[in-house]
Amino acid sequence: MNALENFLNTISGFVWGPVMLALLLGVGIYLTVGLRFMTWRRIGPAFRQLWRGRRPEAGEGDITPFQALMTALSATIGTGNIAGVGTAIFLGGPGAIFWMWVTALFGMATKYAEAVLAVHYRETDERGMHVGGPMYFIKNGLGRNWHWLGIAFALFGMLAAFGIGNTVQSNSVAHAVESTFGLSTWISGLIVAGLAGAVIIGGIRRIAEVASALVPFMALIYVAGALIVILANITAVPAALATIVADAFTGTAAAGGFAGATIWAAIRFGVARGVFSNEAGLGSAPIAHAAAKTNDPVRQGTIGMLGTFIDTIIVCTMTALVIVITGAWTGGETGAALSAEAFGAGLPGFGKFIVTFGLVVFAFTTILGWSYYGERCAEFLFGVGVIWPYRVLWILALPIGAVGNLGMIWLAADVLNGLMAVPNLIALALLSPVVFRLTARQLNR
Image (cartoon, rainbow, N blue to C red):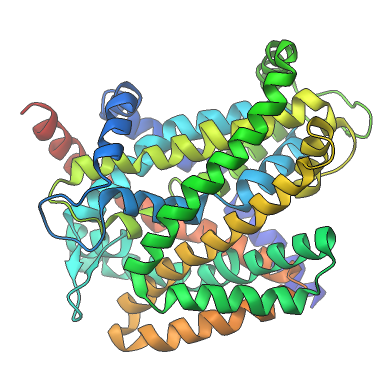
């Protein structure tokens, strides 16, 4: 077992090493420049389109454009926004947050291109449902010679879903509830399985309906709690922002229980945790956007890019500022425990409950979103006959994950997530002329 763990650690270090991080950032920079910084210039119009996208548009599809984004956000706003930010700061210092911002700003173009291609190359399956994502735009955009790359993505995505989107999330929920309320992990696991099953059995439409209700509600509560802490310490905000920017280029000296971090650590963990949080480049979100009821790939791409902005620039930044302002980052805690300590210090008495509640709801919505991603990957590989067995297996895995020791699963999921990105990034680079052409045609109308 130790040999397998060491092997996975080695593979993870390679998969998420300098080459992968450079590839993720490089594709994002290339797409941003190729789109003439449209993803930065059109943030305002994108939010207006999102608001209008609550109503069904004329065109084919299964859910509204707004519901497609909420489904995508249900899978991305999760433990990465709470535990991931805490881990990034613990390992890379406050400067890691600056590199999370950089990753998100260029990742917006990546997410935009993913959604554009997902709608442009989507298909209708035997049930009459719209399906898409990297495996489909590889198949339909790059041709038969590249079909193996789509199969590779679908295989990695189907397997990764059971780690990062299932067992890891139910485990996070169970332990957060146990530490706060004393409820046994197996009971939490059964409750999560029951609730998730009631939603997942209804397919994408029910998942989208629940995500559209839960994601905005929980995000607003979490951001409101963070804003209370920030406004109560508003005079400390300039110094906190200065620390984040300065440490991104100088590294962070040891302080309190913090061991110190180099510039490379800030870059590495900032980029890696940023991608883990917003999933730009992994190829997961376009699977949801492919189901949107629209005939305009560019409009859906514009809405889709907001997922990265909302996830990292807004939600992750709120967590980071609370951690830095309260000084909790020097206490030696990491992950969700660091975020909980920071909120507890900023909001004595109930701050930790916001983190626990947020972690539970965010993790639950991640379970819903990733169930759809994994299911679509399985369908691409095995056909529609695999859908019901997959859903049953997904629900059964949740209580197992809640009570298990997931050290090995975390490692395996980390590796598979990185492997998902490779086929997706190759396809984005090769199909970028299609993205540029569709964008120019739409914006020049």
